[in-house]
Image (cartoon, rainbow, N blue to C red; front, side):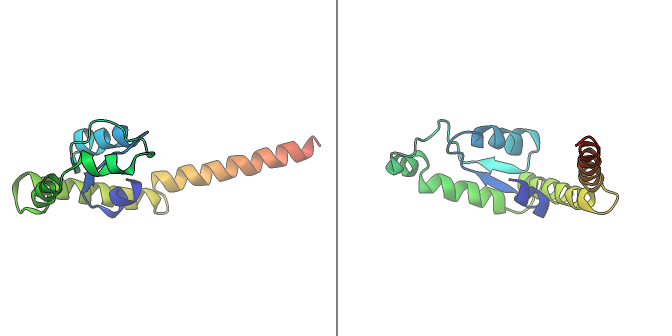
Length: 120
């Protein structure tokens, strides 16, 4: 999810278990940069055939075609994904929010190490 967002590309979601369903809601309903295949329940990996049964090939084809169509909702989705990708790139550039936060974390860790070494 993070990689696709940073790359600025829309996604098709196919959640299987755990946090996949929360990620799907974030991608499809909040960020509006993806489409769902409609999986509604987790799959327990003991039964690999169950994974195959949850999504039919016609649904996969329909969602891919919808994502690839020109204009309308698909175009808006691609534009939002591209904007989020540009925002992510700015965040990791020098002076960007992620750059500043990671730098601060490293500085705090180094300061704590010096503090602990002084009390050793």
